[in-house]
Length: 278
View 1 (cartoon, helix red, strand yellow):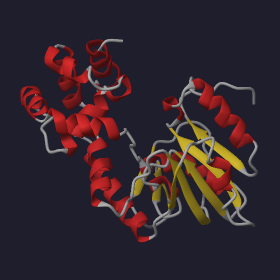
View 2 (tube, rainbow, N blue to C red):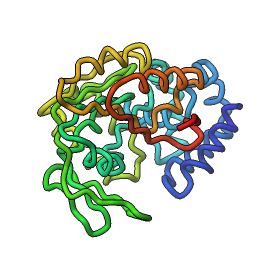
View 3 (spheres, helix red, strand yellow):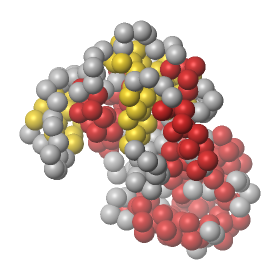
């Protein structure tokens, strides 16, 4: 897939109706041959629109004006390219905890949480947030996570009891490092101010009690980290929108590894990411 095609598809399939700023910007990059040439110098995985736009924002560049974006990116390309090569889209969306909570609350308590692809570990604190499912509220502290309810969803009446929390990531982010938190903010699309405020509130909670975050591979290092969970707690391995970044063979190895562990496994991925017999 060419750079032009990639940015055109991003504009139509991902940004349209979600971020007018990114839709307009991606369409502009579609016809920008100079930026195509610059992006051609980095690995294909690093050419993705959301990564480029986030890096430009992270280094102080504009994204709301395509012409200004072009000029800034060209003028500052060495710094931008350096960040593209080492950064990754590690969006730490705490709103995903609203999907996890009904399952976590129904498991034998207390829990030992292990998140795969943890980023800064903000989703390891489902017991520290407040949830609003339609008109029902659960919890009373931290940011409020709104969740629309459709179908026969059982809204939990309590928060889970978490006694251990750990994360595994190829490049874990430090929630006590202002630069890492700034990168997480740069990954949030420009118009999504509510997500930005939510992230900041969750970062304060995590920084006060940082999780165990291990740099490692989701297959090779999973069992060793899981073995550190305390006895008497229910181990829960979970991940949300992570495995799409893993090649198919790696996903199969991960499924085998996680199934060999005691406890429970929660997977929140698109249907095409994991296909296996139940």
